[in-house]
Length: 572
Image 1 (cartoon, helix red, strand yellow):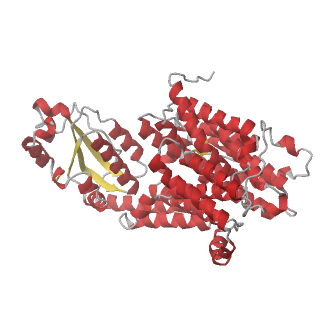
Image 2 (cartoon, helix red, strand yellow; image 1 turned 30 degrees about the horizontal axis):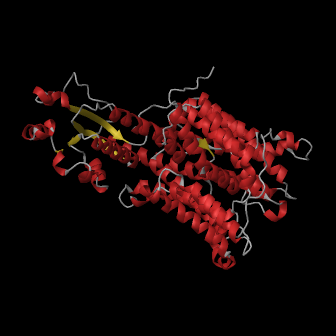
Image 3 (spheres, one colour; image 1 turned 120 degrees about the vertical axis):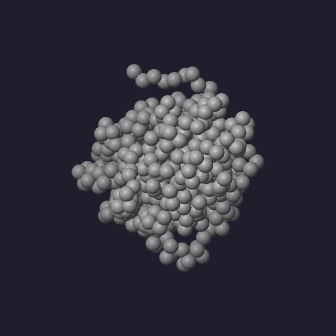
């Protein structure tokens, strides 16, 4: 029997409702985006079909992934990366079926959702969740930035009130000749939505800016519709959704062919959704100082996506910004995610008739802001500072994501990263360095040169001995080590003598850990930093911005003498 916690019910209700309000316009926008490649003139109001699929996906994934998942504070539903894959699937089906058949599209989409859920459940039982840490930061950075760029490019045409091409290359090449066809009213509504989303938080951070943008610009569109009407969502089906196959039993559909078309996209959605979700779970752990269950989370996501596919919704994953909003609003348990879904269900049951007035350019504006939020500006900004191999991986993955294929992008990125890492490891071995797991200093067994730290202050000093390499495969353990530092410590000495290499993932993990210690008022000292890690720390200004030059030492003895001469550090 599943246990639903009630000890934080008030916070969960407020957090869940807040997340649900933000999720509403995003669910509508992601659903419409997924079906954006289908010609409206061919089948009628595709906006309503997309909006319904987006809402159903948000409800089903949100409810079941929260109920069965392994990260209590998660808010789940359609996300930008998942929607990009879904849109690619739908456009491929639409182009390959002659004559065009919306029934085939909807059946294949549902089957892809079932496959996605099935694969994720299998991932969970196979305990694949633990391997997420082996994906290097440059691969993730390039991938997420590519997804953000795709979202932005796909919404430029709807923002101007025109139909968007399917291929990214066509979106870029056709833009100069199509820009003259733009609808000034559509562009005004979309630009207004973008402006509100970015400026409204300056006035009030408690009310979701996306909801305000949706309401304000929809009202304005109703006032000016007699001047120049713009495309709207249209009538959204209301009532409880039913299993998809009940609607298509009488249709002439090649179910076997539909299943064959759905398997690979389903696997892609499962892999992408798992990565997206577990990355958010790590962020939640760092925010709430808790520990998620990776494999249980994958099972929960799989169940959620299975039910989403079963009832005709689009697939989803854990949504980072909605999850963080839930936490900041008081949500702490899985009840918040369930309440978020129940709120969206009430919209589907009773308020759907009001959704039909929402202009498509407004949703395009909302998605453009989502695209910009997905781009990893930090990784792009540091391209000239990180090792050249990491920069090559990041740029390669980004370009392949935008212009080729998401799975190919991740696969190629992983291959390059592995080859680079093997070369680096081989070079270090040849130079006589030894590699081992990162370990924590045992305070009952000090090294010989640490015995001088005695007296009334030794209990205020925490020493970390780090060995080997800090890279994408070891940062999980590194983060655990850093979180074990007690709040009672006033000084942390990090012994870097045996850290021979640090990649971009390790550098960012170190930077985050140092900021957390700094926020707690803890002074950090570093001793004997090897050339490569020192170069990385200085290149991104971790030294001196987080660790002043005077707090780095060539030997531990120098560090000890510094402490003796600066007793006020320990007494402050």
